Image (cartoon, rainbow, N blue to C red; front, side):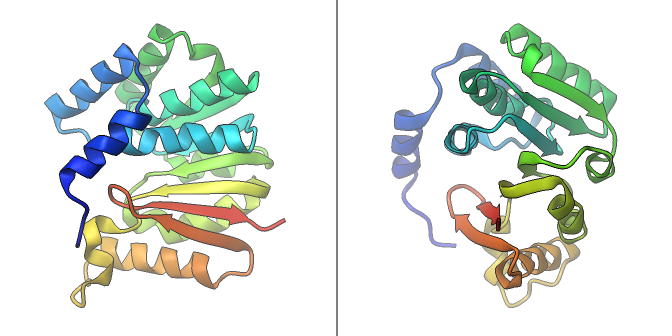
Length: 212
């Protein structure tokens, strides 16, 4: 997959990253443990979208130890309040996320669910402003009907890894994850209920708006 020189990404990050020591510590944790995170290149986009639509209810499907939660919680704080629900299947990750948010002074804007993420979402009240999805890629297509029920009209679905390191354009895209991502992207493109664009930074951030 053709990319900009690495210096361009460093330039973008330098201009847009949050200058926060806790984020640096969270990034170092990801590096030391090879834990995938959206990183400082995409994180500010989450904050920006939450601020742009004045979000007060945000739901994360697959949130790891809370790196993306940090950006959403900052946006809610600056929007005057609200709740981002962090969901993850692992109790230790959930507890770690809670500790990070408490350390950052953002705990009041967070709720935590230890559950399979789409199952947790299915039990949430409708009217959510933003849903961020970063679950197992094979689960993306099946999650979409649940998301459509819970997101408010005009709300945003932000989805990580929708380019799958460029493999979505490979002729031999035959594994289950690649097929699922391609199906998911096509579903959003074909549906009259969605307006869909893709930000190609990093591994592709899907940006979908539920039509009002």
